[in-house]
Length: 124
Image (cartoon, rainbow, N blue to C red; front, side):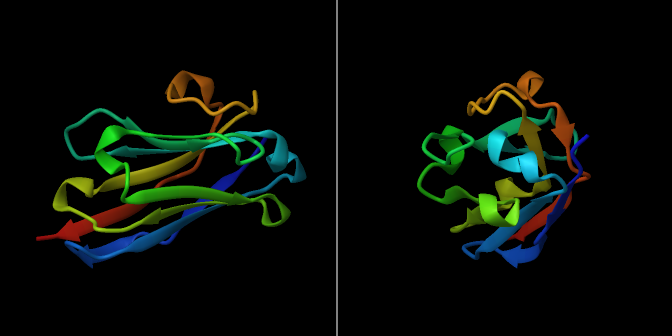
């Protein structure tokens, strides 16, 4: 079992930045691929970004490319999502998730462990 705890969400004006963090409970974190997903009110959960176990492969949804950066620190069992140039349409609950295969994936079915989510609200 892996417990994931997100932090760093909040209220920010359009054009601002936030950095989300997701801390994992197990030292085997370094073998997992990690992903960030989000769910806006009334919408389905969508993939945002993912990173392989080594950090060598990353994927992003088109709408955040060039604005968001996913990274990880395996020594700290933590994955990050740096978000810049935020837009009101980025408003959502953001979830981190762990994929035991170690390979970055855009499919939420590949992710076994999920955090409780952190709210990001971008005002216009």
